[in-house]
Image 1 (cartoon, rainbow, N blue to C red):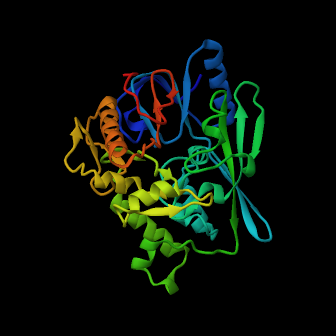
Image 2 (cartoon, rainbow, N blue to C red):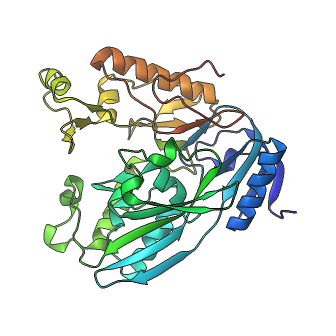
Image 3 (tube, helix red, strand yellow):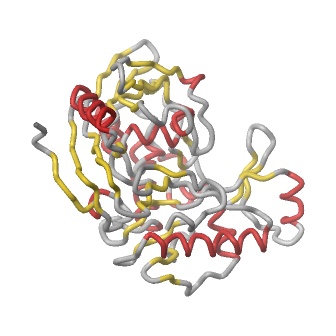
Amino acid sequence: MYKNQIYQKSLKNLNTFSIDVTAKKVIFIKTIKSLIEICKKCYYSHIPYIILGEGSNVLFLENYKGIVIINRIKGIQVKEKKNSWLLHVFSGEKWHDLVKYTLRMGFFGLENLALIPGCLGSAAIQNIGAYGLELKNICQYVDIISLKNSKIIRIEKNLCKFSYRNSLFKYKYTKGYAVIAVGIQILKNWNPIIFHSLLKNININKINPYTIYNSICRIRKKKLPNINKLGNAGSFFKNPIISKKHLKKHLSLYFNIPHYFQIDGSIKISAAWLIEKCNFNKIQIGDAAIYKKQKLVLINRKIAKPKEILILAKIIQKSILKKFKILLEPEIDFINSSGKVKLLKNISLKSL
């Protein structure tokens, strides 16, 4: 019935960590109708399923016993308003392709989020962000669909509960729903978002959307591993958010700890810096290792097993907790044989 369906397919090329696990079936879908049909079949047949885009923020823990649905629902609709452009972007569009599209069209404002992997659906769920900009700053709404009754629900921005690498869609609309589109507003009055490393290489008087885009692409390519050569899921851990009191204790010992004040008075500190201070220079578990140029990234050097990556993550987590009294939380999603599992705080190896 579905032309693009593959049985007992290896998922190695469908997740950026390059974990060589299999699924019962892999189906690529290009329409909302196909998505609903497949999900309904799975529901009535009691077959687990999971929807992925680029597989850029997941770690498969074992073979998946259900159906992996690869979202390729694409399309960009544009409406021009007096002071802005309104984009309705379907969830299977690659995020970086959208950034390039807006630059070609002369819509400026997304350039700080260049080269972030993944699709629009995961961008909304994860509330992606980099270099002073987050999705929540430009998102107007997220459209989700009930896979049981085909009803489309529009969640306005103020109800999405966006926060640091988090949203409503991470804990409420997780089963029986799918993100199908994201509404983005780009203001015509462009104001650059300046960050420290940008000013190192570019004269502030020569800054424009293209110089920011090119600069960020260079920075990311320089400090992050190429997913075609080294399996990884980007930042494995979130940057922890701590209290002022907690920060003062650390500043008395480490005056140069990178920290950023949040609107609510809390402080975000660099997880990469914390890992650096624990001197994990040569640690490697099987083929799982820490990327030398960006300590927040765990890599699959060649044929790392999921358990090896988790053991490495656990070692990092325990060391940071012991040295700094800070618990690093994973940023990525974990998937076992039945679907996503919550290993959000203290990483557990019990499932393996």
